[in-house]
Each structure stands twice: as C-alpha cells, then as structure tokens.
Image (cartoon, rainbow, N blue to C red):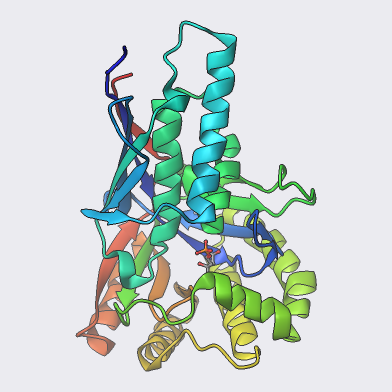
Length: 350
Ligand code: PMV
C-alpha cells in the first residue's frame, strides 16, 4: 500500500480593499452584492504560510493554525476541501497512473506572521493560502482566477489574495457563482511606489463578525441600497481608472469615500454597528491634517470591519506621512508594507 506523505506549501499575502466588499446576495456561496478592489500587501511584511499534506496514514482531515488545532467542520472550509478534492478526482479519473490523493485525509498547517485576531484580513490570506497549498499538492492546472472561485467560498475577500498587485473581485451575475471571481487590474510593478501603513487601534478580536455585520446591513440599512446601486459601481470605475493612470489623488479620494460609505451603512443598520473607535477617528484627522499641510492628497485612510486603520501613501511622501503619524499617534503600534506580488510555491514534494 502507498504510505507516502505527499506535501506542498505556499504563502499567500494579505489584501486590503480600497472599494469594499460588504453584503452577500448568497450567503452559502459567498456571492457579493457588489464588486470590490484591493491592494495586495508585500509578503515580506504580512503573509500566511501554509503546508498541505495528505497520506493514507493520516486518520482524518485537520487544520493547525498558529500551533493550535482549528475547527474545520464549518461549511466554508468544507466547501474548499470538497471543491479541491473534486478537481483532483477528475485528474485521477483521466490518468490512472496518478496517486489517489483525493481519497486521502489532508493535514493543513498554517502560520501567520502577524496577530490573527487583530482584524487584519487574516481570513483572506488564510483561505487563499489553504486553497493554493492544496492546489499545489494536487498539482491542479487551474489558473489563479479559477482558484479564486474556490477561495471565495472560504472567505469572500480571500479570492483577491490569489493575485499580487491591484486586484478586482467581479461580483458576477450567475446564480451558481461561476462568474464571481478575482482578476488582475494591474501588476504590483505597474505602481511599485504604493505603500501601506497599518495602525493597530485595538488588537482585540472584532465585535461583530463580517458575516453578521453584512447580513444586518443588507436587512436593515436604507443607505446600503444607494451604496450598491450607485456609489460602488461609480467607485469601481473611478478606482480602476486611478490605478491605470497611477493617479494617487483620485485613488486616495475614492478609497476614503468608499470606506466612509461602508461605515456609514454600518451606522445606518438597526441597531447600528460601530467598527471604528476614538483612535480610528484620530487617525482620520491625522490623515486630513497631513493632506492639508501638503496642500494635496498624499495619504488615504481605509478601515475594514474593525478599528484598525490602513493608510495608503507613495514612497516619495514617506517622511511627511510617517513623521506625522509618529507625532500624533506615538504609542500606536503597526506595520509598514509595500505592494506585493503573487503567492508562491515554496516546496513541492509530490
Ligand atoms: O472576507 P470577509 O467575509 O471577512 O469580509 C471582508 C469584508 C471587508 O474586509 C470589510 C471588506 C473587504 O472587501 O475586504
């Protein structure tokens, strides 16, 4: 009998949206109410490292995250395992010389190089790495866009972490979700001077999960209708244009307006949801004063479903931006990151 342990690994980057995904039209398939765009951060700074192995000697599927056994019974993780196994099984059916990896228990080991609970889109890098690592193990021929369909079912934002650079998630229109996937807007090298400063306003685990926050917003916010019908479609066009033309002022304005619109919808739910805190609002004021002092927009804030602030700026404005932040928010910790490239295969021992 085949007792080989087959193994492959990968890393996947964190992405931070500049036009936000907020709202599901199908919660089971993670189909969004709107398209979104993100910037992939450099893996030198923030990434998930995942190894996938399988063997007939393993007893059951397992996932270890930062040294702790994690629950894999959830529908999202199960959907990823099922889809990847089905693709491997199709390869095995067409080539009988291939080992039957699709029938073996999987062992996934994953490590973040940043705190998981800090609300830093860890689910995005996590599911992207899980899907890419198993795809590498199974030697699937699928493109990043194909794999983004699977990662999306783990966590919506994860579909954008299959690519480096500037990435769009097209909402699609089909009911089965087969056209709801990520594609590349521009390579990281197209606009390499983009930087992100991540300010940790609170490292506590977020209060309202993105899934329940989205559900409540879709169900009770009147503003949300305006957001998905008019604001986001306009922001998508303006943002792609800003990226293609490397127009930072436009990129920044759309990022800030889109973040504000998303958080306004959260405040418009009943009861309201507040993700930002006093430190978050101080960061917004700091960005405003940096821009006022510069006489043009050189910094942009954006907030996900938590209080931490991500500030985008260009390398050439680093002194003005970082200097101002160390003055006003001296005690706040965080990271500096550049724009990164695609997830990579580390080792393949199949
Ligand atoms: O992928 P999820 O379900 O954790 O949702 C992410 C939602 C935001 O981070 C707030 C926005 C986004 O587009 O990443």
